[in-house]
Image 1 (cartoon, rainbow, N blue to C red):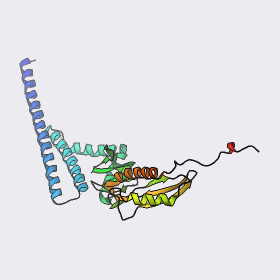
Image 2 (cartoon, helix red, strand yellow; image 1 turned 180 degrees about the vertical axis):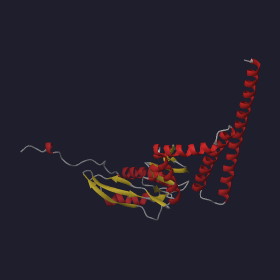
Image 3 (cartoon, rainbow, N blue to C red; image 1 turned 90 degrees about the vertical axis):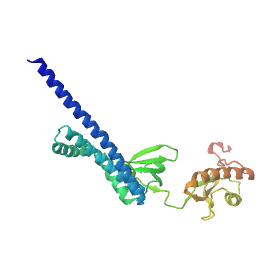
Image 4 (spheres, rainbow, N blue to C red; image 1 turned 120 degrees about the vertical axis):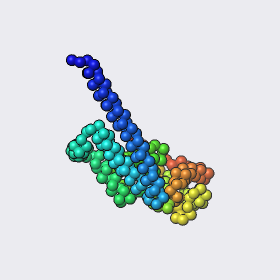
Length: 272
């Protein structure tokens, strides 16, 4: 066996493979750069046409994934892999993966329905899937929500779509629901008058609709007042905490006794 010929053959093959690897890397990085540029241009164009941000980001995700798959096929074709067979393999694998990952496809389908039905859009404050937060992105399989406590959370579209969705941004105002426990000896009408006068001074409380302050129930400690001011969505928590503090301050200034149970226990009855 001619050692020089073998070495020459290996050298030629090594150079050939190296050039193919180098070409594949060039195709990959250039392709990725072109895809990123196209997606950016698409985003700018959609923004200039005032396309809904939710639809725009969803379309960008679809284009990005589609082009990346096409790039992978192109790189494999450069290596000499039969792309027709590869496409058939992808289709067959897609069926198998679809059967195994039905939840993933369910998330995809739910994302399409969320896009069509539009129960919310990017930037809306919603309550759904046990979370309350601002929608940052509607993706192919998951929705990104920035919760009110500052945690970025990714929720499967199917879980979100299958739950009750409350869009808090669709209403101009929101009602803050609080209660105030009174002692049995306190006159509820006096407490209501005090709260009505004071709550009008709380920042961001709306004059219309007017705050609702009424007796909601009675319990062994005494009457319970429903205290329900209205405010804009963005001021909800400010009004919530301020109203709680107001209840405590007003009742303390009025000298109301602390509520306590007035029922007598059977074991405490005097002996005959």
